[in-house]
Image 1 (cartoon, chains in turn cyan, green, blue, brown):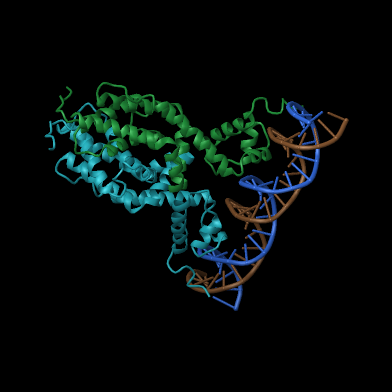
Image 2 (cartoon, each protein chain N blue to C red; image 1 turned 30 degrees about the vertical axis):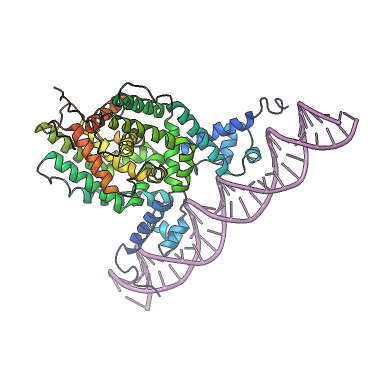
Length: 212
Length: 212
DNA sequence: AAATCAACCGACCTTTCGGTCAGTGTAACA
DNA sequence: TGTTACACTGACCGAAAGGTCGGTTGATTT
C-alpha cells in the first residue's frame, strides 16, 4: 500500500519543500498553515515535522533553495561581453529575465526582508546573494579601471541602482498599473532596456551622441 | 473613575489608530493581535470593535492616514527650482527625507503592496500616491519640452527609476549591510546625491563635462 | 525470522486569534 | 429624576493555528 518506502531518496522531502515554496510565495509565511502545505504536498502535517523541526526551519529550507537557483543562473551571465558596458547590459537583462520567470520568489524574498529584517538578511546574504551582488559591482569596477566608466562613483552604488530598478518593477507593478501615465507595465524588456540605457549613459566616461 | 467620557471628541479613536499604525509598521499586519493594539492604546479589545468593524477596517484607516501625511508633505517640494534638473533634484531629496523620517510607514506600504496586491494598490493610488507620481513625471516632461532632457524617454519610466532607488534603499538596507563592498548604507544623503547625479546625466540632452 | 529503521499518519494537545455580548459608568438632556 | 446615548469593559466563543505522540507500514539488515 506504499509506493516503495520513498521511491527515490529525498523525494518526500523534496515534495514538501516544493509545495511550501509555492504556497509561501503565493500567500506569504503567516498566511500558509502547515496543514495546507501537507495537503498540497500530498502528505500529512506530522510528516513535515519528521523532516523539519519547525515551520521556520521549513521556511529557511525554501529560502536557501531559491537563493541557490538564483545564483547558479545569474553566474552564467558573467564574463560575457567584450566591454564592461556590454557585460552590464547582459547582466541586467539576465537578472530581469530571472525575476520574470519567478515573480513569486521575488515576492518571497522581499517579504522576508520586510518582515524579519536583519537576521533574515544575513541568511539571504549567506545563501549566495552577496556573491551575486559583488560580481555585479566588480563589472562596474572593471569598467572604471579600463576607462569606460567614471572613476568617481561607488561601484556598489551603481549595482544597487540597477538591481533596485528591476526589483521595484515587480514590487510596484500593481501600483504602477493604477497610474494612467505609465505605459511600460506590460513591457518589462522595454523598461529594462531604457533603464540600462540611462544608467550606462549616466556612468559612462566617454561623451555620447544624443538621439534624434 | 472615567476621565470625562472621551476628553476630546475622537480622542479614543485617534489613540487606537496611532497605536495600530506603530504596531503594524513595526511587526506587520498578521503579527499584531487586536489585544496588543488595545493594550498599546490603553483601552480594551472590545472598544476597538466599537469604532472599527474588523481588523481589516482598522488597517485601512491606518493606511489612509499614512498616505494623506505623505501627500501633504511632498506636494510642497513641487514647482521649485529654476530648471527641470534642479526641480528633479529637490524632489528626490525631499522624497528621501520623507522616507528617512518615517521608515516604518514605508515598510507598511511596501508590505501592503506585496501582501494584498492589486486591490490594495488601488486604495493606495486613490489615497494620493498617483498624484505624487504624476507630479514627478511632469517635471521630467517639462524638462523634455524645454530641451533639457532627451525627448526619447518615457517620463514615467524616469520617475520610476528615481522612486525605486529611494524605496529600495530602505527595503534592502539590512541586506546591503551584509555586503562588505557597500559603504553608503549609513549615508542616505550621499547615496541619493549620487543616484540623482547618474540619472540626470543619463537623461540629459546637453553633453556634460566629465569629472577629474 | 527477528530486529531495526525511516517514512508516514490520525488524533490530540495547547495556545492564540478575531470577534461577540451583556452589561457598566457617565454625561447630557428631558 | 428618569431616560437616552455612548464610550467602554471583562468574560466568553468557535475556529484555526503550530506542534506532539503513539503507533503502523514496509524495506533492509543480520
